[in-house]
Length: 293
Image: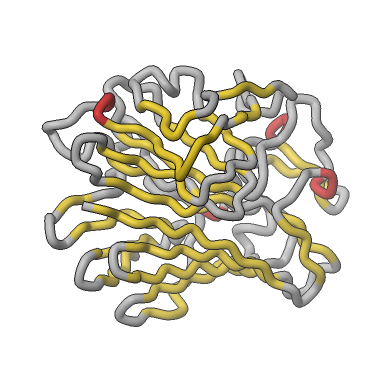
């Protein structure tokens, strides 16, 4: 089921399947700013990545002594979340461990997804709670896609990915199979922006580590129209699009964890995590996205 909230600037719609944003309308202009989920290009729009990001080594894990198969980015994006609160400017959903999740990941958890509108900004907070486990370790990340170009008058090359200041984004490589290879590379050196081109993602995503910038923005160079993502506090920020030409969307993805390693351990307890919670503890992270038109 879909739920909508709005203020004077934005109208936000979230689908309970995956608690995934499916529309962000800029009301003064009527512009849709989120990717439309065309299945011929990329069928998703803004999936939540939990309880891990990326792929598992060998596509599987060993947890509590049992082997489990695991698809890319975990299962939270593919199951129903329950609406627990709706006000004029807030939507809140919860996902609890259940008969659908336990065969995929044998841990009790609560995942709360809270959306709040504030002017031209959407705040999306993910909160994880450990109700009964001795230790709950997990990975988590955001994966929103934004439509590019913003209108028919512009092309891919009219945009850039902009930082707050000078950056030399160092990237860890997950090529060619989506698993960490142990290699790294500089996407650019001493730049304030990375030009958007239709070939930028020919070899898949770029996972930038330890950026100093507070924001990673998608900017239309001649007008200043932009999508501004606050990535402060995130150790990893990915940029990605399908290699389809011309480009249809750009994903800006703040993550707190990484994919598995090519030859890494299968044991869940050995996988580097975003957080490790004792029984009764909780942990939160927020992605704030501002739409300037």
